[in-house]
Image (cartoon, rainbow, N blue to C red; front, side, top):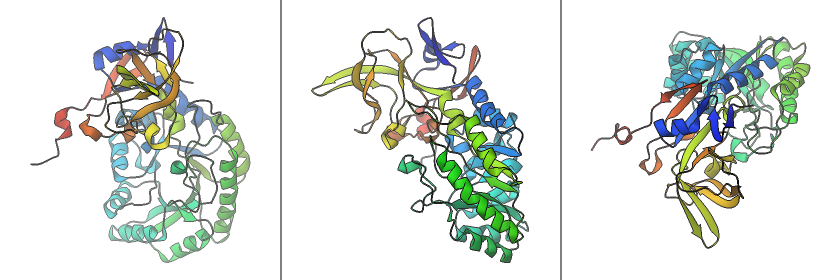
Length: 413
């Protein structure tokens, strides 16, 4: 559920009309609902009440400091994949002891920063990375907690670009060699194996891939304990999907009940890394129609938001619902909603039935909270849009719109 709804002929975010934000802040703009963010976090976290668990919000989904601060205040930990994300988490007041660090290409500087901060654990993605973390920790006079990220070779049934748990993917350590890699840590004096981690992909809409991967991990945990490893954490990653169109993903309570049954008696703290399921439907990209255009085989609606603002449709062929901010009714037409970028791949919706928009109309591109602004760019030298957080009847700008001066601030002639 989210708090974007039409009232008195205008779409509101909570108690603020989107027309007001467009008038005062301009378009394009990302608009977030605080009430939705809080509701979705609680829905996920409370589903696992009664068992030891830690929710580590996946920063890559949406890394705005205000969003991170909101989740930190609610007790969240954080899943990070870069030194920059660690920096953001600490600046937002996040607890370093609730941070798990994944990612295949951690640099020495990034490892040093995480060891110094005292994170909960590194998710190890390769044998060479394991050795590098041990060397860095040794040079710092530290012993740092780690978990191997296991690649269980489970097909999550999602888009190939966001599949991460199969043998052809770059992520993790194949489950067939995992026990030997854990054994090798006994010769390393500056890493401490404390857990097992796994993340098989994003936007999963079925329970079976989660359960299949968990069953494979349970066997590994048992073998490790038999050999004296003190495995305290089982990190099951994220990936629970949301509804963009007609998907029917499991509710967090359904997800939780299935996993609770599988881990009964395992005596571990479960760690989760939800991102999209919390922030995805908590935001819209607000754009304005500039022109409409009829071509021999197409009708185009040209707006002021483009693939640099929201790249998911161009990159993944992702679906985002298109809604009129001030719906007028009438017949829908088939059209492409496109932007100003000089690329044929610049579209927000393609061959889609949508309202018969006219120049000046406002459009809400729905479900834009995850991998929206965080993947935005300055392509075509376009300043990135602002981010707005609505809280009841008020809103505040949590990232200002970039200027042309911002575009060249770090360049030298």
